[in-house]
Image (cartoon, rainbow, N blue to C red; front, side):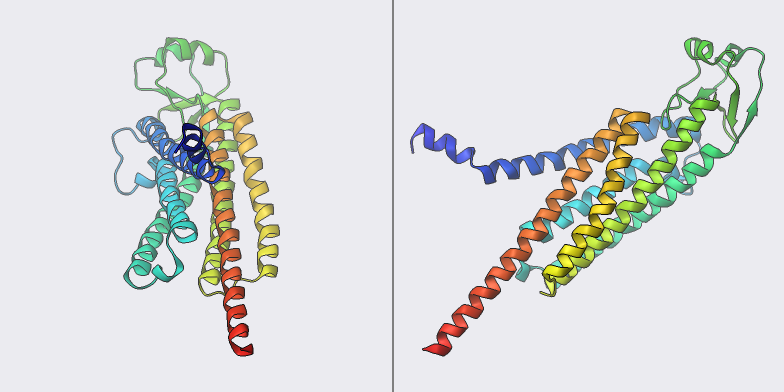
Length: 292
């Protein structure tokens, strides 16, 4: 094989597309680690050293949610593009179903966690102190972002000096009215985003279930495109709002998830086309055999 032919083999569009797709999946894995680090820092301020099984979901909502979605994404990839239909039976089928049930358990739990975190961030009361800097060194934190509650230091206290302050009840977290309002808005976006993804994934599950039973039709696919298109638009708006109001990680993660599930949609379309072509080929062979 010549050098040009060898290079062309590795630059084949199909190979490049596959490499791009799995690079997106890998980047989502990196995001999972980053969200864990972010949750760890935020939970230290919100819950202190009292994180237990009862508030684990609230403390690590984003990282648990992202990890469960990543596993679920890989399951969709396996079912729609990797494992042949005839292999999705027996023990493998039940194993994938068990993993899926566990993932959905974590995802629904994380959805509850977003709601619970919203309840925490809106439970505030006015806080008055003559000198904000007098709180430095006494385990107080301040709202720098929805998921960022750094320890109050000399620089931060000067920023808060003269501001109308609110305190998150039950914690030693304070913030300006504007900062807590922004945190509240971002928390609501989290709820809308998580709920919308749950709707989309239910629609995908229905399509996969129908496809495995060769019951998925062209009209159903067209209706599915329209319905899911609306919900993907909602997710796109959430991503834009994160980009405007939140931090880059939230925006970047939302963008990656949209791209990743576009790949799953493409897998389903291709899977359906291949099934239809195989059925047509089989029908053609049967007709030829009858006409002989």
